Length: 171
Image 1 (cartoon, rainbow, N blue to C red):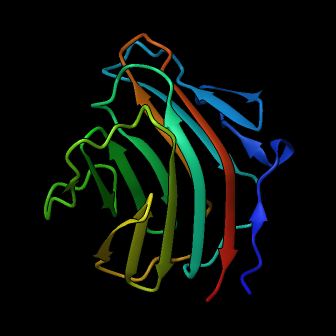
Image 2 (tube, rainbow, N blue to C red):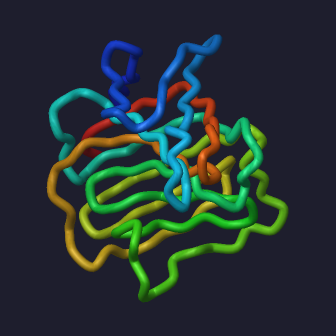
């Protein structure tokens, strides 16, 4: 049986990127309303770094417009990026080659979705509401923290609701 560790409010930090507030059974993360090309919000789990063999699950949805801008679940080695109609895993948020986007017609980030990401060595497997995709990383990641983030419009506070954010180490 997998031992899950679920993150609580006192274990979360925005590291000065947006704001975080309790909302019912979960949390709302908002972007910083930056005047750069996009606003940004990020929350990380304040715990020791996690090894590269892990499974992360979360239930999330975008509360504001910007469905064309990604929501992200980041883990050691990269980030799952999700937007309206597509999702993909980037080894770097500026990755240019080997476009990882998987088209998912009709996928709407404004609805709540259950996400499970499993990282085992070079392999990344993702399930969103049961639909699955997989990617192979160019190298095995080292330990790191896990987090959630989103981009919003320029000088605008985008918002993401999430709950049931948990991690399990190992197989």
